[in-house]
Image (cartoon, rainbow, N blue to C red; front, side):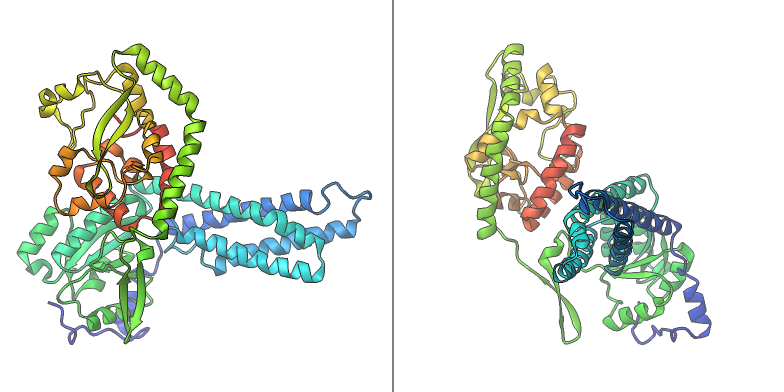
Length: 504
């Protein structure tokens, strides 16, 4: 067990211990340098294109009766070049390419926007005070064009990075340090979300290899035990890790953790601390220093108040627009269902909504009329691992039904449930009463908000998800929902529906 008194950090920059530590992770992974250079080049291309468009379109715009003089043209180009350099510098100063923010989360996009707004805000003030028409043209054209271009470029770069990570590359090599249970939990979370780019290459347990039970359970989870809490630096050297993730453990006292940070100083190894707090979104967590301690303050989930009202207004307005815009599609599907199989066009079923209240959900009928009666004979063929029934080759599904289910077109009538206030555009999946009867205590928290036409489960795999993952995603949404998150889920839903993955 690690004792604070025995964990002695070498003095920074001196002695053989410091030389060994600095050789552990002083070299950044090659993929980081490659991706960082790619972002620089891509940013430069977007900025140059935006400035070029502003020069060609904005400065003169074809409105002058007389052509610009050579001196004016040269001044325009110099100004555009200087602002392009200033823009690139602003992106760097705001750390928009920092390895800690690129590839995941909203911080990267926020820094790009902040860097652009601050620069062009300053340019706008100077242009107004100095009556500089060329600068005003840049603010009016280059700024919006370039900012949108940078955001799109970063999104494309992120998708490229995620695709590389899903194939098993371009990830940080992580050494997890802490107690066995917490180590396994963090490793499972990092392994589940491969796009985040953290590959667990080893773990350090309190007793190291001398703790047989802990070692056995860790290795059973596919985690190689490479050291103890006293040999973290040696483990970093052995595994080539560039990140040390610390989870709670009895031996990791505040003094020991601080000394571990000192030991890793100058090595290029990132030290991250994972608190015993999961499935809580960033906006709900605030770090508040108290008496020198960085305390995490967790805001309670928001189920009531102005945000709920805003969500209801948004649902009804967007739902109305979608009903009008998709009316030809709704009519076409209704005719296809009616003309190809016997039975009603719509399928009505009791579902459980907010606070456990039941309501009638509307869907286009995609199965034969007696599908509910056939369910008992098919129960043994259930391909799902939870309370849901899912079957890829379900004989109850009609030909038209198979098509509309693949692209979630059968769920479009739920827009009327949205307009009636029974459902939301985004939320947990609406469960059946029989499913709710088997809910565990924590799963019932899904009923604190309205069910949705789409949700995290929709954009994360739909029927391909395990029951555990479905519950985890729904509970995460319930605890952390926001209008921004809803908009992002709606955007991702378009791609999920077009792919048709996980729908059957």
